[in-house]
Length: 99
Image 1: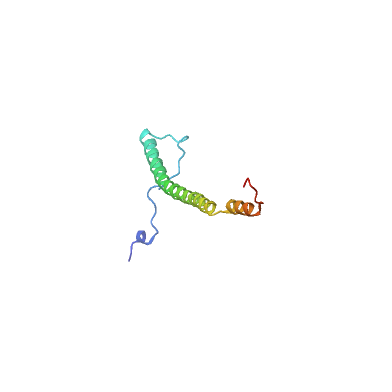
Image 2 (image 1 turned 90 degrees about the vertical axis):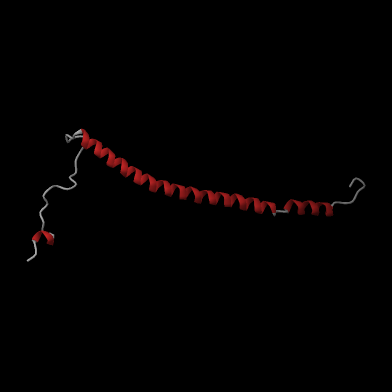
């Protein structure tokens, strides 16, 4: 017959991941240092992920801004409205000796 501990009925011998309050519980210096190291590792892991997202967002915003800027220059360079108005004004103006 199989052992009961291999079927998931094992009794835990020690508490695992017991929640502690570092302010109220008396912890040794080594335990506090270990807590700081784990928290620092977690922050670094999250920071790397956020940095990647921030870079992608920055590049996307920059691409949109440059696209709008380029489109504005393109559309203004094709605008010949003032040239057409000047040509019409010259055509309608009466010819005098001063012109």
